[in-house]
Image (cartoon, rainbow, N blue to C red; front, side, top):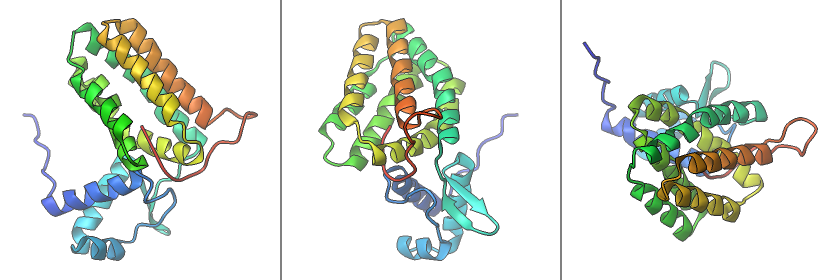
Length: 224
């Protein structure tokens, strides 16, 4: 028999979504302590849904639980960034290649790109860009591949948040997004996949250069 996931109680889901949003938009920064009592008071709930939400976020890699330091937003360094983006490089271009090859609709990607272009603040643009990438890989025809990319999606967004606080480059990345979508809409599966691979590679190399190059950023706000 296939096991059915236990649904998350509504209060826990509310707290989970709110904390995640704050982390991925830079309102909560890497290394910042997440105190159950303070969060419970902010959200008007008991400590139980906060505790459960933090456990879930720890499972996705956005927060770290320590016996001595308590719960903190995960720190981002070059090694962590490269690990996360290595997974993206292995899986995301192939997922897009398959989505284009099967003639999947990319209307959601086009809509997300428009929202990013029309965004009035960093948080709105960051969330729209995340949705753009997800809309490219989700219709790949392999639900497992989509779920695997979803699992690293939040960590990738945290990496981007840190990089964007140090060196905003919205216009450059927006132009790359438009080119990726153009190729995909033209039915050029290989071209779109190659452009996406180059886009992801250039971002992590620029934001977290190898030893001997420019110093990598250390924390704060974000994108992707």
